[in-house]
Amino acid sequence: MRIWEAKTRSILARTGTALALSTALGCASDPVDPVDPVGAVGAVGAVEAVGATEHYVVKGKVVNSAGKPVEGVKIVVRDQRYYDSNIVLHSDNNGTYHSRLPHEPSSWVASASVTCQYHGSQYTFDLEPSSTDSFRASAGAVRDFTWRITGKRPGADGRYYGGLVATNLWFDNVPEEVVDQDNVRLTMTPITPLIDGSTGKVISGRKPVYTDSGWAVVDVPLGRYKITATYNSPNSGKVYPLQVKQTGSPTFGSQVTSDFEQSGTNQRIRLEVKFA
Image (cartoon, rainbow, N blue to C red; front, top):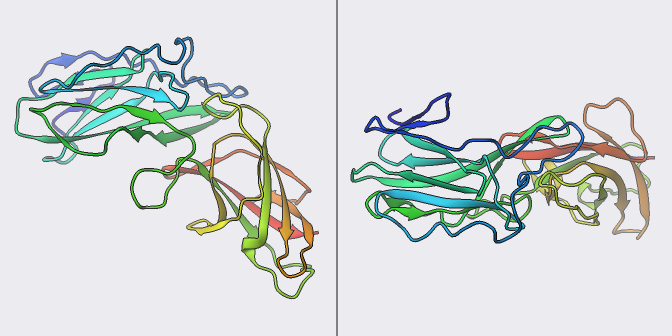
């Protein structure tokens, strides 16, 4: 690794020059209240423009979906010529970052992630880049990032910034001859603010899709939810209430309060549901 992140969170460039960074994390740990990634930073639009592209410089700003700056986001600027050759930066209290690039004929790409504590668990989110294109060091680049907790990710892989809520329907005491997993419907009511501090909305009636985690409602913004379930029969038109529990829990109930778990680079809730 030719450029590395020291424990003091400064960057030692290949020239040997230390580039000091502001690295106070913008995601505070709190077992009850959601993360406030902005803290005391001013209102929308308070971030000054980062300016035009500069030769041998990468820079940008990081905001949340409301347009407010986010401090402590990790930005990784990767040299595409060499394995694990990175410049690692963190956004400051204005959401901005800035670094010089070596005077070499290299191409670079930038990505960003934020790690937060929420109700006692740790979550990591990839941020949406203003561009996924690589850039030459000699040209420099402005790469802005947005922390989104819902919406489609760039690219054609069908992934979302929101988490998924997977359901496994038990085939016990079925009231009809034919039942299918994709007829389960969830009602998810947020009972605290979401992880980014915003107010969540009730999610109800969305048809699940098949995923690597089984049948699931996708692109759910990360929060703590009270969840109920029904089976909506397309054959009889009847709506059957279902019992629900988190996977691994011992008992079913008419509702469950659930937090997400981190699964790779995504978040998920896994539920078991059955007919009463």
